Length: 445
Ligand SMILES: Nc1ncnc2c1ncn2[C@@H]1O[C@H](COP(=O)(O)OP(=O)(O)OP(=O)(O)O)[C@@H](O)[C@H]1O
Image (cartoon, rainbow, N blue to C red; front, side, top):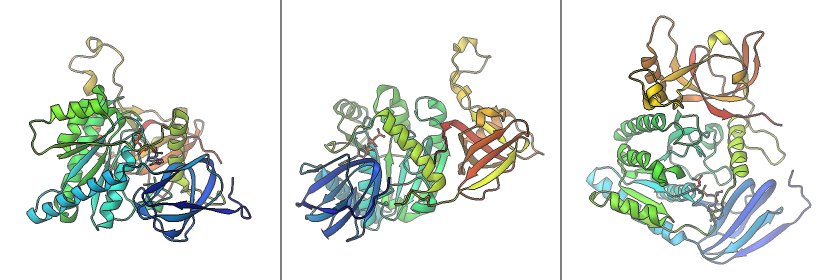
């Protein structure tokens, strides 16, 4: 549905330190700052510029008061005066202090891991801290381990991005570098729950941390500015603690920010009591954070995939990008997927093979109807016809290869033995290794 003119703009007057919270689904609204200063999760809005929103739940905050103007109707909107923005600002100031000290002592800046249950505002806090850091001209690394959301790329992805510009207030982190200017380093896990194939997830997380460490060690500005690490909600449950402890170790984390979770805070305090260099801090949950039901999350995931191929819809529902179509022969594709975490009891598995090692073995996917609507990751790795690799060697190479991008299988023709795929760039796909997960997307108009 379009926002059509002659409906009216309506003014919203906000006092200092108030927040205008709103939810829009299929409808679109436009919002602009008419007077004063306002920000969306730390990104300052330009004066008199209309911003377009749909399918989102956000808030506009003002430190000094402002007049907003809105066009269109939200599902929910209200002004709130009780926000944790001072806590967030103080956290940012403490991090700035640590960054300056790191520069002075020529050591690593703060590496902050944000923890909490589902829908407590982890991604939002990451975004605010990154934006406030950018205002101070810092160049931080944003590590996104939340595969359910995949804020910077697609769901199912672990990523690291160098953040040097304010995050787009309309698109958020966005899923395509073509519109957001963020070019993340991505590893494809392919599943939405980090515990589904936790061993493989752990291997990818380790790989990501090693590559980021290498990059940071030769880039002083990033080294002093440090990391902001967003985590999946499963890290905050007992069953996810092993992965959480691994993340703290792999990324050499020195601060855990825990949002609104008493038990987790107490568990982490105990766990890291003897580690002087690791600080555990409790942060209030914002009253504005919205619970997103399964349907909304699913829609969000599908929107991210669509946005990756077509960009964000404009006001007139036109696509920003025009993806490329490619036809590939079955014989030219090399598709692999992460091995099953064995349903059978370990005793029934072949000798020397346990559940964990099965998960780090790549399985060959035979091209066919099974590929229809799948979103596949394109690795940098090419199959070399002259080289024979054991399954073990091949699996290791694939698991440690980051992604060039993704494509989507729009058609499978078993009779002609070809697949038709859609990709945002004219990529050379022949002979590349592709990774398949559980991500499917049905193209809708
Ligand atoms: N102050 C606020 N006012 C309105 N909406 C908000 C506010 N803070 C966060 N939100 C919205 O609440 C939702 C949940 O927040 P967020 O994504 O940060 O949580 P999360 O803890 O990262 O979620 P999860 O890890 O479960 O995916 C998002 O849609 C976000 O935009």
